[in-house]
Image (cartoon, rainbow, N blue to C red; front, side, top):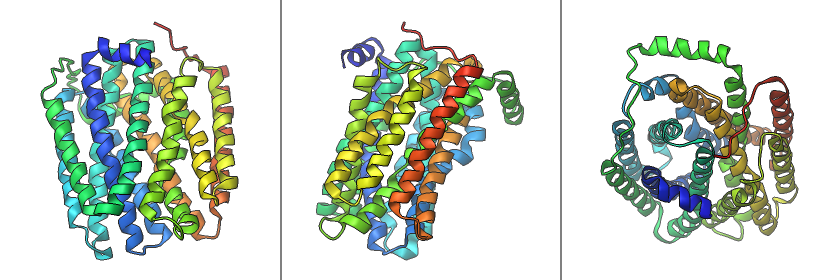
Length: 403
């Protein structure tokens, strides 16, 4: 923990950006639990739940081809402020969702809200390599994941209680107010990092990006291996677990919050133990460990208390895998392409998350048990370990230097 504290003390811009992250993410989980609680109250089927889960990621996939070019052309602060304004508007508009007849409006608002959130994330992640050195960049990525996980832990737990006690509308209002605070903090931040101000048009920049991937295939391979982390998009799985196994003895919103919060405990704790230990070679073992943890969850998910413990184990390896593979991509990419590389990386990651979310509901609707779906996800992490092993053997992947 001292390493993260020192990093923040020595980098005031990162400190402010991290504070904004904490506030924005914390509020976001209030809306997340409220949305799924609302859907279950409308008595929608598994496909609708899966589609909503998919929408949380789909926007980032569709906008990636242009978002990277925009990031590489414009100043980051103005862009980030605009994106927070979009999140404020779309969050407060959720108050108008009253019944299942408003599902189309819900779909649109989720899409717009998550498009802005994804765009903001991509902008920030393309900014960090310009202000931080290698090992500090890895620590910053780990810190980002820890902040996400911490807000996820506390946010999910509290939102479950809040939605249960005060209702979904109060959760939407509180989320919107969190974004207002985040906007104020970013507005007062002195961020001097300039954009590239490229004079190429968007289409030429997109074409140049694919030419770059041909010159630097290691970047494309690292993007693909990072996309395997999208398989941990368990929102639809958790909602269906709660509805099938736990709703008879615990409130839906509480159960959703507790299961997500439990996994987030592992997400927070994992990098504290694994961050200094991990290197390129050991990532292979981490993918195998992630596969075994998810398989463990599958075998005991019908038991609520076992599922809580298994969720912690599942989360334990995820943050380190996410942050280390992300840092490797940043390390092995040219600075002039940071915005576009990060955007396309997020497109693949979010595409993987969206497909996972939808397939969970789709497979379940066609008779595949939740345990079977979870075991399938576990097996794909074994594939990821083999793929990364192949990448290390065939590509020139630089280690993250301890500087």
